[in-house]
Image (tube, rainbow, N blue to C red):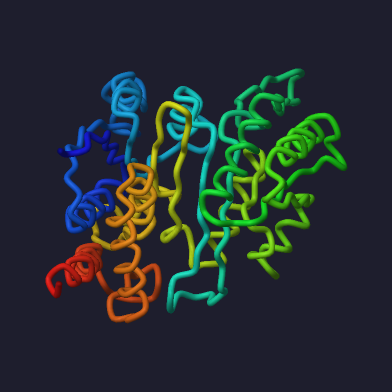
Length: 338
C-alpha cells in the first residue's frame, strides 16, 4: 500500500528538486501517493497567505510531509513559512545530520548531528518598538521546551549509536534563559547515564566545529544558535546544497531542504537536489523504510565518489536531470544485478 505524504514543492528551485526527489524515491521502490499543496510567494499573491490553512491541515492529517524551499522576504513582507509551519504544528525538534560526502570540498571527515529547538527562543517572534528608534526582541525560554528538546537529543543519540550529547549555550551571559536550558539538559542527562553530556559555550562550539567537529557528537541547542551552527556545519561538508533537514514533533514531521529557493537559477536546471534527496532518506527511515533509505544513501555516496556527474554548485556541469538520472541508475543497479 502506498504511503500518503503531503508534498509542498515551494518556489524558486523548489519544484525542480522536489521532482528529482520524487523520482529517486520511486527508483528505491517505495510507493507514495503524493498529496500536493502549494505555499510561498505566488500563493501569497493569490490567496493573501503564503501558508494557507489547507496546507497545514494536510500535514496534520498525513503526519508526514516533504517540502521544497520557500522564499522568505527580508525585512518586510510575510512571516517565514518555515517558522510558521514549525510553530503551528509544534514541530519542536529540527534535526540536521552533518556528514561528509566523497570528493566534496572542503574535505573534512565530518559525521555529527545538530538538534535545534524549533519553537521558541528569539524566533518566537516577540518583538516590539519600545521607543521611537528602539526595537526589542524577547528571547523566550521555557522549562517544558528545554526539557523535551534535551530528551529528544538523548533518545536520538541512543537510537543512532552515539555516545555523547553536547548542550550548547551562552549561560555565562544569559544566566536566566540559557541557564534554564542548561539546567534542563543536566536533569535529563541523569535519566540517560549511558550517554555522556558535554557542555559548551556557543562561540567555543563554533570554533570546535571548525577544528574537531566530531568531538561534539549530537549537539543540542536553542533556536538561533542551532540555525547558525547548522549553516556552519553545512559549510564544513560542501554547502547547504547537500545537507538534509527534518522538523519533528509528536504528531507530525516535515522533511525539507535547508537551502534557500535560489530564484536566480530557477528553471535553468542548475539546482543540486542532494539536500532534499537526503531529507527524503530521513523521511523513509522515519516511516520504517530503512532498506530503501540505505539504498539511496549508498547510491548517493557512489555517485559522489565517482565524481563523473557533478552539479554546478560543486564545480561540475551536470544538470539537475543529469544528476537525478545518474542517482536513479545507481539505486536500481543492485536490483538489476540481483
